[in-house]
Amino acid sequence: MLKTITAYSFFVALHVLNANLSLAETPKPSVGVWLADAIVERHQPTIDALTHHGWDHSNSIVLHGIEKIYAQYRKPTYFRYIKRYADEYIDDEGNISGLLTTLDGMHPGVICLFLYEQTGEEKYRLAAKTMRDHLLGTDAKPSVFAKTPDGLYWHKNNEKYKNVSSVDGLYMKDPFLVRYGVTFGEPETIAAATEQVKLIAARSFNIRSNLAFHAWSYSRDRAWADSITGQSTQHWSRASGWFAMALIDILEFLPQNHADYVAIRYMYQRLAQGLANAQNPSDGLWYQVLDKFSSEGNYPEISGSGMIIYALQKGVDLELLPAKYSEVTRRGWNAIQPYIKTYHDDGPQITSIAPGMSAKINYLDYVSIKPIDVPQAGAKQYSHGYIGVLMASSVME
Image (cartoon, rainbow, N blue to C red; front, side, top):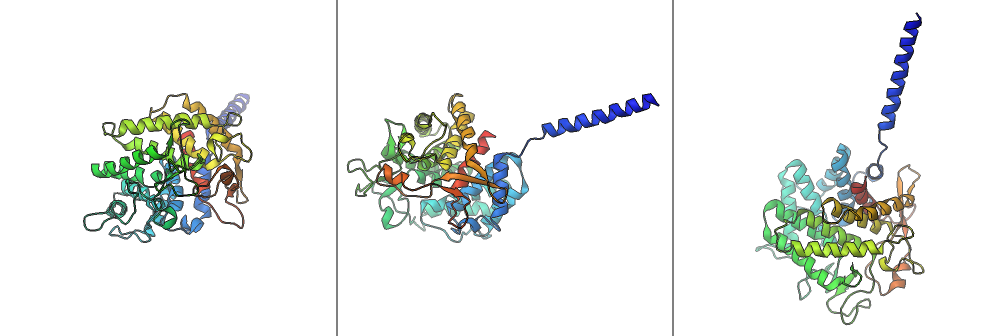
């Protein structure tokens, strides 16, 4: 009897030990999963319930971030959520309702490519072609997108942006164009993208700080534009984040034997140096105006910080940056965590996010626009708060 009890006790103890070990080995949900789950639950039936902007980057940037989390965890709810949004606008022939004539409206093209790669459905290939043709034009239907006399796309086709280009415009169109050109064997589409990268970099990149100015005016007649260079005056965090993500996402797909690969890689590596130097050594974050983190009124900007973390860590992962940059990204990722609060629905709230903004006249104009939270009660919602954390999570967790 004693032997039976002892054996039974041993079995129970072993079972409890195994259970505890199993619990200990079960990873907690990542920040990315926590955020992606919350977005899907909060904004139904599609992400457009958050923005009401239709076929536009303010929706697709969030879905692209969820796509990155889906690649890690393969949760079907993420895929269905992305597909449901796209199917609201894409018909069976690949026509897209609500096309915009802004570079921001080009970003959903990456969603078309993602869905085609995942499903093989012809309508998504045709939709991606629709996006490509909408920007670049065809023999039968020329592009309606305006360019500066020296070949850069205006950021938006309106008077406010006449002859104005912005570094964040690269992210909205050029990773899509490169990926499209590589996927479907169109070298001319790749070349159209890399030419835009070289043009804007030559006009907006600051070789002293290794950072990019927010915008550039061909006419040099804007209040924010330098009368000699046409450059804006400040290095805005999120514009630099978009720029950095554009370069690394292009390099991920651009063939290494392409004529522009070395130039774009060099540009990315120079920018990486500037971004690493712009990290605030006291807290590990990047600020609204990057190179003035200790100036009065400046504040941590979490969307740009997340984008920069993604762009630098992905560079390490692709062996385009030395491993020491992981120290920069790890410190930045740890520093972001206190800015991720728990909202009243038990999902995450991302704090200290700069609202959307065009180029400003000076430093004070940038920092006078105070940060917001995403989500926030009773006010306009900004999807930009989600994207940086999603992208950073996808490479840091």
